[in-house]
Image (cartoon, rainbow, N blue to C red; front, top):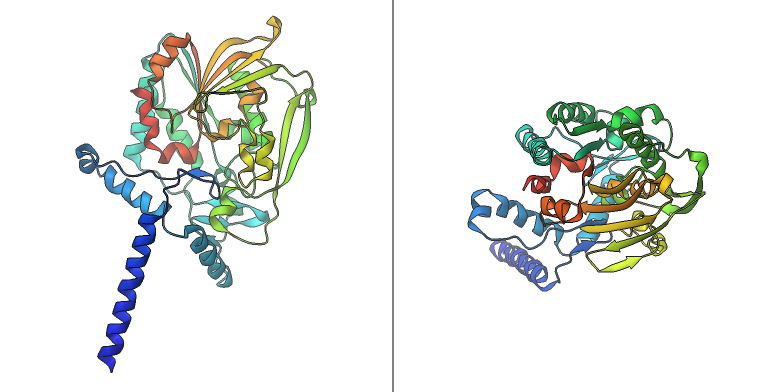
Length: 381
């Protein structure tokens, strides 16, 4: 009897594995997860170099995790169980004080971090004629470690930014540490509570810091019409953790009292838009894509400015999504802004700069993205 029961259990287990595997291969491969607000791992590339470097194994593991059948439902179930157990962490997200969610931040791999800063140095060194600025912005866990759950482990982002600042030394490269301009405003709403981005006010302080560093006169907050465009934003941290009982964030727009007319060309889709804000996203899960219409590999923004207001004719911004709520401020100073997301752009940046006559570059990343994304290595190729 026991042997028969064991065979039934084993057979059932094998059947479940078979059905899960079959479902995995039958389901379509998605490129973007609207629920998680991120691009998913694509099909791993089987090449000899990828096998030797272990990149194929990493891509394969990421692919299985990202495309596991009913993944979102499993995350929701796991979160419910964890909350019943009074756990303050789920899926890499902590439930902190004052309604804040935080993403785990561990000590970065020292050798990889050195590779990334070397890539920045090589890029700057290969363009001695260009003026380059590198801004590294902390995430909310960097500014508010005291709001983490009791005894929650974390590594200091301030140390990481300090290390990066010491490493990226080049005659034509200026480093801006986000802690320097955000720390004085830590008591304000400069980060979303449920999302990994800074708020528009946080982006405004970054804009002021950048203007001061390059010698431009920033607009004061009084020169903007500040408007709440959403009170229902539950961002990426909420999506990943599925914690319940959270108060949604508010999204604000800063529209200049004397706006300039801007046109945005999205190379990915070959679209030309007359607004830097996409209202349609305010009715979706991914409300942060209200700014610039979300993630794109290559964009160009051209603004009609009075000659007296032009501080630069052209500027290249190499960035992650922290730049999306930041870039609209720059349209008050720059006639033509070229925007490259290094994570998805595979062309030669050197050739792009030469073809478009670009002599000024801003690199803007948040600390979490910078230390874990080896796509930054493409910048020196």
